[in-house]
Image (cartoon, rainbow, N blue to C red):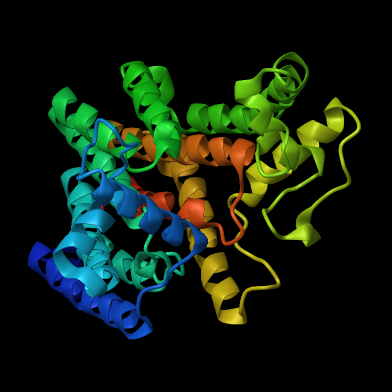
Length: 378
């Protein structure tokens, strides 16, 4: 029995990659069977791509983001089949995202068998089974987020960051989705603080995260009134006062976009505004809504439960591996940064904006189990 356990612990990397291929084929089959999906944003991207084609790809004369460029390219090369090709491109990014997921864990010292038992979590992730088939920027964005996580992990291991690759990836993130400023901020911030050992203590990081959770709504409440009363007359910022944008959404008590059952009464004071922002921040990670199917809710709850358990394990067993502690801290700060940004702007109807940080968050589970095994020298 003991020998069998040791064999499992020594599971070879090739089996990890074989499992990735197997899981990828299941995910690809599921999406290809469902077919591509067009949302209102997809149609907007399509129109922008048509305009880009009319400009003969004159990128200096046209607002450029990568998804629009890819759609325009697909339209030029594949005509009426462009949506199917875009779906295939998204699925290719799913495959490479899974490969980078495994590679990142391997280089920071997580055992192959832990990665092996974690990969099925990707297969049952509702987010991974939903968004790649949409003609949107989400899969491009999610791929770049896991890629920048890998470059950061590689920098921790080698004790030297490749700033050229990091800058290039951050630039690609920016021109894939402008809202990626939350990711860019998190990466730049963490590179700045990572040299200080103070931020490697798990309990200190958790205290920092809790402080952020409390502080962000307070800061956003101040920012809300600052914008509302100081700049609302400036023509360029008039959009802030409409019900479709941040200030207007808070004015009507909106928590989750287009889900009125989550809304509160219109705020009448600073305390009410802070409460709205706090509930938005919490609801960014909310795994449950009555409108979703029972299976959808169960899988979401399982996913968030494993993430919560991983953070709890880290708080007790972390602190013995600088590299693993750093990547764990990076993922938490990255997630809070993205959540805070969207709690100020918009929590989407289907929690779509959470998708790009799902893979990094799932990495917390095998890292935390690795910490237990190292603690007891298994």
